[in-house]
Length: 283
Image (cartoon, rainbow, N blue to C red):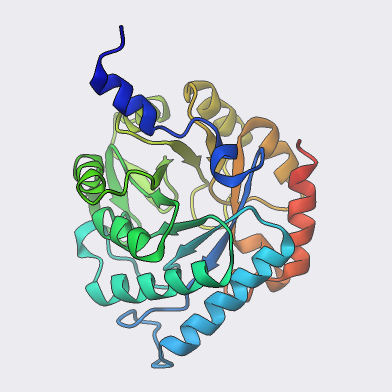
């Protein structure tokens, strides 16, 4: 007989990405916010301009046929980590995400770089998001800016329960881009710890934004993931997405679907259409 606590934890888990996105092997498109207030790149243009650009990109993604959208503070570089993410960034991020969710009727996700944890959850609740991308749910490592960081699962899952937000699913990175795991935490260990810590899905990425992971690494992650879905988290292109989705269960795309394939440019709906068409060819 399954004890009630185990039944409860099992019931929380997302077993099939189709339950959230309504399709097999979903394509999730990125809305990269312009630098938010307080970020070094913020040029005083105000929230209306940030909102205008984010909504334009979201509509281009929807027009191109993606199955879900993730709103991320991509240009708040250099990134703060964990509890050091600034309150003005969190507040602005929530405003943008809410506006995107109201403008485009697709499942909405949030990523707060780096590893926003409980603040990430707060943005998701305010925006009405269905899922979050958690940069480091378990394990420990160092980010490119030099910040040491650790898994946020213990606090995040407790706050999610306290806030009545257990419908928000946790998509967790393993061997995250922009970071190096501490020695002794190999891919198999990181996957085991991340699944144990409550991840609904796992994300595998390359070394930095726009870099593709090795296909062999994706296959290894999928073999280690048990019944957890695995998504590609960076570097997917129209040319490689069919191969990646032969090994993985979904894909997150940002850089490749921008105008001229340049990450700082707006989303190009025609590039989105071509990418989605190639992804669908994977079945």
